Image (cartoon, rainbow, N blue to C red; front, top):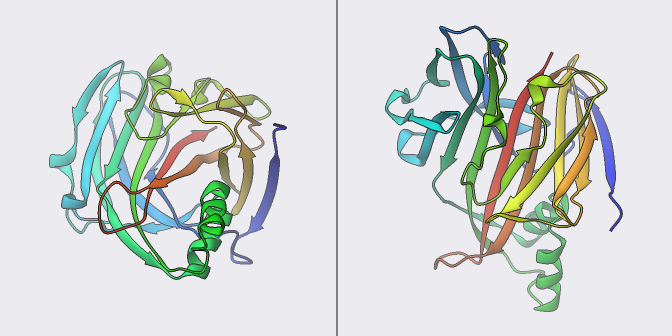
Length: 265
């Protein structure tokens, strides 16, 4: 399968690139010195332009900081109703990973809205199944959960925390430490499910720079890898949606909405 890349640039306020909302962890910045604190927000929105997602603590199943294999649970620090999810002290030098997972939510969509979502996320196998089973025009109930990861850099010492497994249903693993990259550098990400590479999956790669959003849609190779190039500094996000038949009663489908965020100087 040839690697397909579609790039779109959106001027702030002009057009909406996608109908689907993304979910991600938004830091107040990406680079820190030891002893400083990270103010973390949870965002939802379109075009990598987010509003606070005021999710209650009961909706978060996992919130933790990882560094060199050590995990610290942050759930107790969550501020209910605050636009900033949590403040995290960062004492050790290195590349730190913040992980957040939500519980399942139920969403009901009419056929047009659901089919448009499938097209936008590149979920062609689900579209094909609906056509084959003559359910293309049926409304749908879908469970979905959010799994989002943030990488930040503390001090100058970089380490391999960025590429350690995170336990998400679908994992986005950088093959290089993003904080070793500069504008113009190539970068690769591996998309995995239960330790196996996912082939032919549409991955979205987002960048915000000078009040503009750039979006690339890239399909994974057989080894589960996508490759792109750091075109600009600023915040970057890699996101993917995987949908499978629901094993729980009450919905036909289960989707996992996964994202990775980092910053480039």
